[in-house]
Picture 1 (cartoon, rainbow, N blue to C red):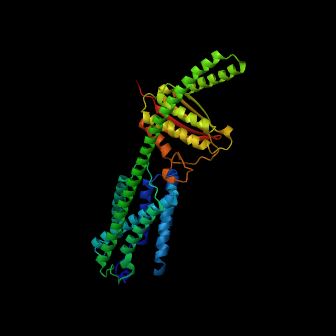
Picture 2: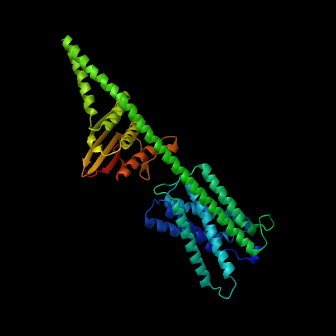
Length: 438
């Protein structure tokens, strides 16, 4: 057996590599615990990883696979605890970390075995030096490579199919890299010690490279999908604005005609009830005109369109808006912010059975050289935020949060911010944008 001829990687080295690989991906992902807690968790994780490897080393060969699965499970758990990822994402990143750990540990031990093992200069100090140098270079290089395919503020969420593919890549690479250590007589095994080390390191390198390329491809695919989806939403908002503009122009003409009809009816009849009824009609027209004259024709169109929809569905909507403050903004951006914010508010109100509770209020104002767009609506649902954005209640999670993300992107375009909160059954979406100097 090779175990008698070739010394295997020390269990402590394997545990340290697995832990360091987890640290690489934890640093890349967005941590949801404080730095002090993260340090404590990582220290505990290292102790657990060492304990698992030492115990696994004393198990009979038949329990080798369960021992490896336990070590991988500990790695997944460490990543999940520090980053609070969904289980699929934790497993996905755990598999990537495991292949990275196998590669660096195998490379370090192969270099040491080839260059120093059994020779006069082979001391504990030299062996430790190999460990420090190769591990440091290997994991730092891996961090730099992974950082290159990581897009700022974008965390990949994998599907079950993508997770299964990644796991299969990891299983095949690990199985082939360690085959010679378990079974000597197979078409993919070797009886020569140099070849055994080469096979293990090269298969680990191939597995890590394939998974790295797969991850880069998934990132690009998801980003392109999100970008295309948001672009479609922006185009839809602009199309809605154009259609609303045409519809509202028609409504305005009808109201204008109605004014003349009222004047004619008033001159032809002096009945008290008729006059009272006509007064009410005229008053409603004046309220309608006042509500939708903000000083910005784009905002007027969006508000009128949404107000007519709210009237039809018995939703109370009020606005206090100085539309002139929006004049520096692009047409599509105004449509995107107000269209998506009001659409989300309306969707929430339609879920409320008591019609008297269906309330939406928005304001557009200036405060200390900032444009403030504040959207509030009555909401009895629990607000759950993830990365500052509310989790969707829709069954189609593929379109999760794109409306709010579109608003966020528009705000950032002008150097602004978006914040979401809830207080006493009132959901609040606040957009703050610095007003440019004239």
